[in-house]
Length: 119
Image (tube, rainbow, N blue to C red; front, side, top):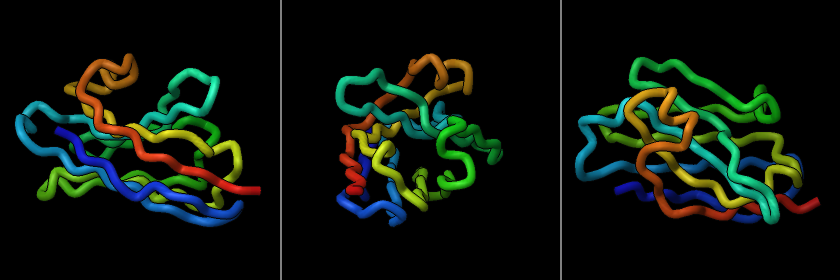
């Protein structure tokens, strides 16, 4: 199970921190990360981090978002800075066995958390 938290309403330029804690069958979770889905758009990957700390980001968030993870707590974090209205979306925690599978959205999903950035 994945429990996400940390969404909310923020003004342009503001910051939010998302958290996602994994529980249950976690031994196969090598990749943890976030997707997002804006109204009327397809779900897109945002950022991911592997067990050894390797990270990937979508170009639109590079330099503004930072993903990290606490393996002892089985928790992944997404620090979002310099938020823009186009970051408004429902953010979903997603975990997978490999990065390739994660990119294909194959794995476990948490409930979404709404992030709204006002202009």
